[in-house]
Image (cartoon, rainbow, N blue to C red; front, side, top):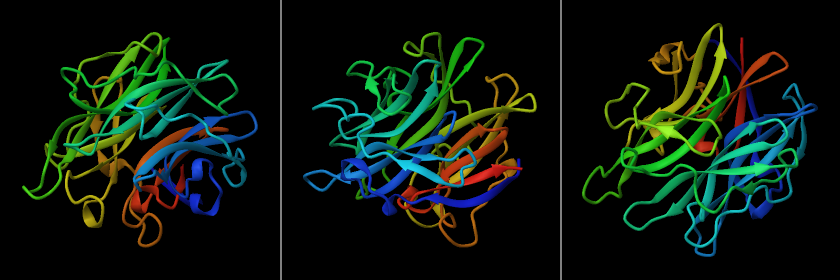
Amino acid sequence: MKWKKLGKIFDPTQHKLPNNCLEFAQSPQTLVLKDRVRVYFSTRCRDQVGKYLSHVAYVDFTKDMRGIIDVCDHTVIELGGLGAFDEHGIFPMHVFDDGDRVLGFTTGFNRKLSVGVDSAIGLAISNDGGLTFQKYGTGPIMAASLHEPFLIADSFVMKIGGIFHMWYIFGTKWKSLSENDPPDRVYKIACATSTDAINWQRDGKLIITDRLGDDECQALPTVFRRNDLYHMYFCYRPCHGFRTGGNSYRLGYAWSRDLINWTRDDSEAGMELSQDGWDSQMQCYPHVFTCDDRVYMLYNGNEFGRFGFGLAELT
């Protein structure tokens, strides 16, 4: 793999976003339409007590990804009600073109006391071309289970031979660096399958080997097929000290012939940190998509996408 960086293409602080959101454009995810590419992302506002709420918004680009056509000015999907799994935010939302409807696989967050948050995956459906989404029920379609005990999140869905395949993450443990530090979460990538996109079969099997040891955190897989292989990009980091400095997110890469056995080889990822600028300290939340026979990657840079996302093209 070899990627040509095309620079940062969207800064949320330069636009008026719905729900009084002022910064962050995290986890960009695409819906390729006839005349444009719609990029959904999670942005943030502050609630009445000063804590963040994550909302979904979108920006429409020209098909060559060089110009912005429109930035949404309305609520794309409502957050959950009191006590719901998505009460305090949706981050991210992966969209899947299912013919006459668009499926939105949401990651809902809700705050907790002993640890920071919990999460689960929900389903929403759009019947207006992706302008708005209505939830398929109040609860999630995938949540913590016997073998996946925490933090179900970060879904990416493909349909292959009539079967939906979902790559996602689940938490394995919470761990504090010291007695005086709050607990940090550890999560890994897994896969599930479904015939209806609602009921999913999963086994809690870790499919990507660790590079940093058992406490490595792996997030936001994205999968595409090229040259008779399946390719996966994701981001990874150590459990602790990841918000600043050398422990920040980096991009990882793995490949598979059968969607079951994955070989990790980050040296073949083809994406390195820049010497300076917006992605010189961190690269995270990758999303690979195809448009007009070109393969692109959207991703976030420094500060987890506080000031937007950038684009690279596979050469």
